[in-house]
Length: 130
Image (cartoon, rainbow, N blue to C red):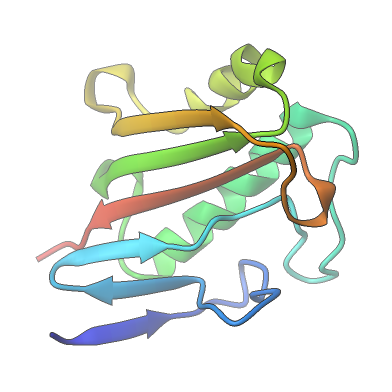
C-alpha cells in the first residue's frame, strides 16, 4: 500500500503526532480540523459555534485542495459537537459547503470535550481524483 502525507500551510499544523491528511488506496483521510487560525494557531470564534464551524470547514477545504480534491470528492464526514444543541447552527454552515443532492454520508456526535475546548471538529474521507 502506498501512502502519501498531505500537508499545507493553509491549514493549522497538527497539535500532536499526526498529519493533516493521508492519501492511500485512492482515498484521502483527513485528521479532524478545529477552529485554529493556520497562521497564528489561535482559536477563532471563542464561544461562537458558527464562526468556529466556518473556520473548521475553511481549514478542511485547504487540506482537500492540497490533495487535489474539492468538496465534491468528499464521501464521508464526521462532525463532533460539544453541545448537540448547536446541531442546527452547524448544519446551516455545513450546508453552504455541500449540495444537498450530492452531500456525503455523515455522522454527528456530541462529545464531552474537544481539543483546545473548541465547540466543533470535523474530519472527512474523500475519493482522490483520477
